Length: 304
Length: 304
Image 1 (cartoon, each protein chain N blue to C red):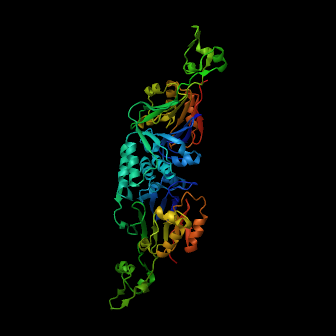
Image 2: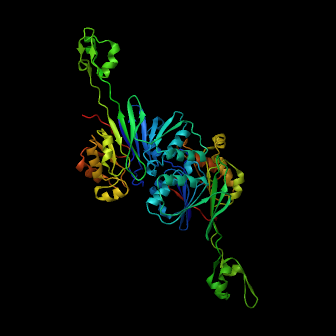
């Protein structure tokens, strides 16, 4: 399982029961939270998510609609007796804010909060099955996007074939990496004869808040699912630029440049009650688009 | 109009669509907010309150369930272009937290945030028609209660009587304060003959979070409406004491000691889904009690 559940799809001002940014990533048995606007802990309860399963939280930037719910979530985790560590990734000043708020409340968390300041682009989490890297977007204040990628899956051994060719079990790990086998008679057994391709690796790119910038597209090429903000409809391109945000058409162009397989759009301005036009406008230029709707989970699909 | 609207009636962990503490006081044309737990700005929208009318915010203490929603509310006020000042009363460290959060977001508020640190008991706001004072409660960290009192209403002049006794208009203001009049013949006209009593002054006492402490009752004598927390039912008195909270029976005893006219109870623990027992237990010892229910406004009634 690899998917994203939207907990908040709105921009700064909460409106129409839409909430500020928060996304929950399910990856195998892992839960990651990306951004944590005010009310995220209530949204987590509303959608019956077990927050004890969240092991890693990634905060893109320090505008309130992306992190004001974090201290509440962390405090609640503590009140509920969490004991296992929580990894937190975000701009360096975030730790200062959290520590100050814990200190004035005389709160000592019953779990380790392991803080990883975001300082430069690149790998920030390396797991045997996946990796997370961060990249800079272009916003009014320093802002980070996140790319979550499955690692290349090993090839699958075809049991009857390895037996048929008499390949010793000790060589199986090398077969999985794609190596050919040479038997004791010096004959080469091509890897493709005894293994088959496994599922391809998938990736999710979260592009945070950003003004339209093509250079970022190079950093998130070929994502199976790409999240790009569309704060405004296409007629407000100037306002979007002035506020370091993007429009529908810009998100679509970005997705094309990034060769995304599918585009997910969100961070809708509170100006708009209905979201239909966000979808229709974006689809004009990038057909495989979906609206980020709160409470809905989007699978990150294999490329067909 | 003098009343209180409950925006949050729960203790630290949000549950059952109950929210952390926030109360809105309506006093004539003024709106005051007491405490501002996470999600208060959403609650304000939900109950269609115009937050631009809030001129004063009072924060009792720096446990998150009483202030984590403040920075979001202040930021939203700024985004919506508020220009008139906002007065904020709370523990001194609160300003440091807010300033740090505004600073990292490069946010400059378009209105003046006037901060009044709570440092000692007594008058904190003096208005021609009402006053607000603060008093210390007994909690795990420094915590303040608030007493909002109408000022004594001037006596009302009986027009036909002042004309009958030939009292000059220049003396009316003194009549309103209760003074007798002596006419040019040296005759004393008793005040009661030419004026009548106005409505009595009312008061609302918000006792914040506190362990049961009778000494506090002396500070809030005769309140028309007294809010006292009841985090737990009566069988959890030990737990309440250990956590510096109170039970139903303790709130009732407190209300008796304080000679309150009416008691409002809240800050219910997330342990409890249903609240019926809070009401029945408290009423056993203090009949004129109401549950603080979110979205409900409670008038502060004149003493009959």
